[in-house]
Image 1 (cartoon, rainbow, N blue to C red):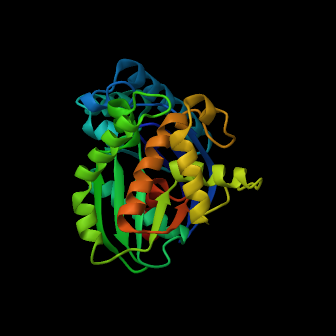
Image 2: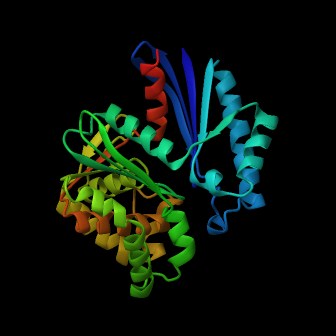
Image 3: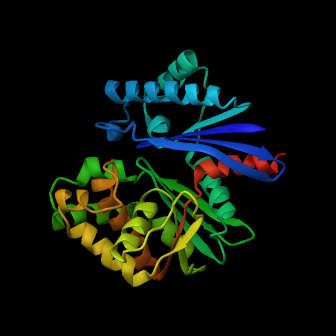
Length: 307
């Protein structure tokens, strides 16, 4: 069966088309578009008209591609930006009307569960681990081991939300940093309570910002990684810390000139580094991995194991 998976993220819309046979799959096509659905007023829970239109146009293009590939089944899910927006259901309705694509709005819990399934499929979970997925609107945490998901939660501390609310300086000032960290600390209290008895030793970053971290670390070593074929990547912890400090202290211009960093992520990566470093420090974790498999692969995984 030929399946299309669409993930409508706060910053980026993703399309993945795969041929599924039993519990095997082959990815035929994948793309992502920086739609920036959460631009401007995500903290006011509104999709602004320009972003609304970009989203509709992107999905019209996705539908054309889906038709070319003669896809038999489409699964489209929306996350934080649509979930929290007062006009999110209007967006879903107009997409259905203009493209025929039915969008399922995921709850934070459902999103976290699908991220777990995707990361598990990558083989990155080798021991007791904490998975973190930094989106534009929300951040999901999943405590798990190779056998099961132990605990999961979605928090409204996504990079676009924090950037619009707190990131007012270039390079980021100590004041802005402290405001972000104070907010993260307040929001994540129960995460640290849950993790205390388990003491996970590995943090697994799900795609997104962690792919950028991996590309930047590799670039600094003059080596190349191919994210299209890579399922997981083990960071040298010291190399990651050196990179993250460099990102946090650099200007917008300096980051934009770094090879391996896409325009959408030039500023968001600072927020991602701050959140990641805070969690690593607070939980005393010194092993960091990337899973290139995320929510999209979790959706695909469901089709593999549902037959």
